[in-house]
Length: 281
Ligand code: ZN
Image (cartoon, rainbow, N blue to C red; front, side, top):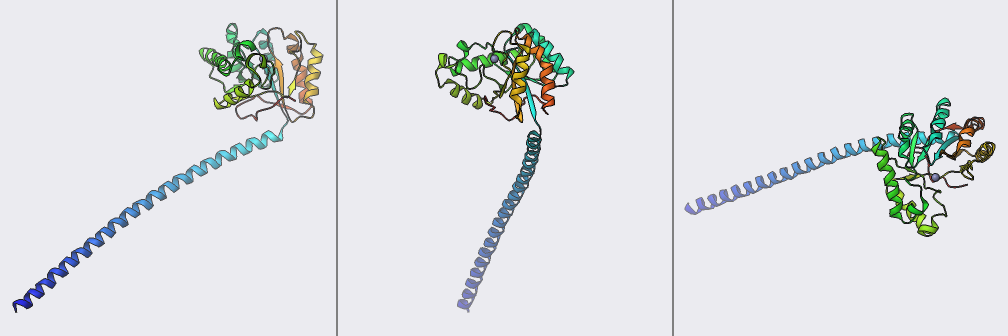
């Protein structure tokens, strides 16, 4: 009887242990199920967020696509004025205002013309960086000396309340040869690469007014240079100058605008979204 009781007891102990083990196992299993459920919820949440991100990106892409379509549909002329501001810039701003046109000014450092920079900004034109000094010998010595000159202008503009511009035009253009003399043949290549690295977009031109060919180029010559150069183009980035001596540029501007209009152009200013790398013709 004792033996039988012992055996029975042993069985009971055994079954009890086995029962506890099973309960343990089930609990562990439940726990791991919980962990998995949390993990799946986490994934679901992340996926929902990703979905939002994708929808957001898709929206931006569609907006950009519309911009590109619009850009391609129209003949656009970008009037650009380099080397100012000067007293001539005021007259240019007046003409632009009368014609309701926004343009782009690639400016240098002229602290005596503070109010004109501000007028450019207040009237909605683009201000691009054309270096502070515009001195080939100074800025085309090295990549560093070039960007020092760019920063000098940024700092000056900031000091009068104009935000840093990411739009750049190299004095002499991106494929100038004048820099060879000071910084070697590879310098422009290095500078253009560095400018992209620093977040700048640089713009050359594909129509030259030729107003820099002499101190007072004949007004009619400037007009015909522009209107001949723009013929057959869908996008015309027109190079002009608004430095102190360029009086004939001012005198030619209204006829240039009228002529471009009759060629079917509308006008716009350069912005960071403007297609860039417009090279020389
Ligand atoms: Zn220039």
